[in-house]
Length: 97
Image (cartoon, rainbow, N blue to C red; front, side):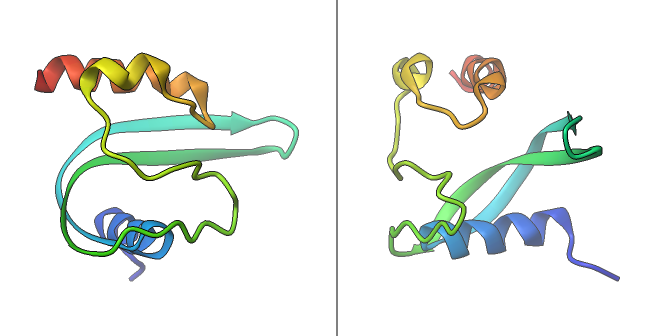
């Protein structure tokens, strides 16, 4: 049996940001097709709580621009690698605000 999505989330966050997290809830699943590669991908998004570690960018793919806590008011100004995720973040902010 392989790694669960929750365990993958915790591992990836630790590896790429230095934070240890607790997964609280899965809130979104995105399916994406990469026509140029002939593949599809399924991405799971989770709400997490930081429980330890120290902030440090360790991103071999260079997709992390910064690690910072943002307010709900800052969401529309985020520089995203995947801009199609903006509406998902806006919906999440409305849900939590």
